Image 1 (tube, rainbow, N blue to C red):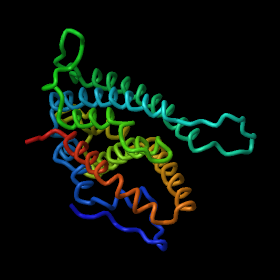
Image 2 (cartoon, rainbow, N blue to C red; image 1 turned 30 degrees about the horizontal axis):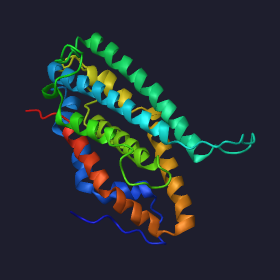
Image 3 (cartoon, rainbow, N blue to C red; image 1 turned 120 degrees about the vertical axis):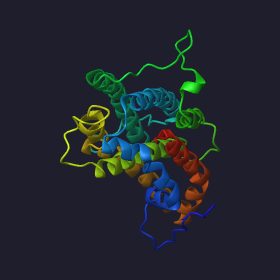
Length: 267
């Protein structure tokens, strides 16, 4: 396994940039796949897309459980801050989490409405309690469920929510990068009418997953993480970046592997 880059005091790389550069091959595998290419080329059929979307909905549910753990770890200031005082790091994380919950609830509705528009089936094989059977879940979903359920079980670092913050930022960054890569494969001369999915990805889904609003949402959490690390650098020196990259190396690879396996195999 290659070692992460070792930033020196002269480096101007942020922590998140160091993390992105630490495993380039794994990041590429997580964000470029035949599934994404097929979606852009219009060869992804409705059945395959529907199965993946139904798994993406369950990913959202695991994401929500993970957010619940983040909320319990936030240490918010007891005193009222002045009107000119910037929000604390914990308050910024809270604001991002609230936005995340609003976004993913909206996303579920978008999935449902867009699938109905194009006649895409989102049903999954479930038991009598409405729980999806394990074999109905793609490997990437199972890996993400494990990852989100592990939030709060890692060794203590300060602040305690930095670990899940990196997980949430990482998965959102991969998702954004992946669909931007898919978008770059689109043929602008095609309308989507001849696509196997009826144009659902070309005309609706890809635009949603590469929007400036989504990019801003992802970048906001990245800035917060980098601000926290910058604060730690002032206290402990630049070596803290190297220490954090090493700390997150296994976690990061686990996330990248989950993202890679989240894209179904296509012929």
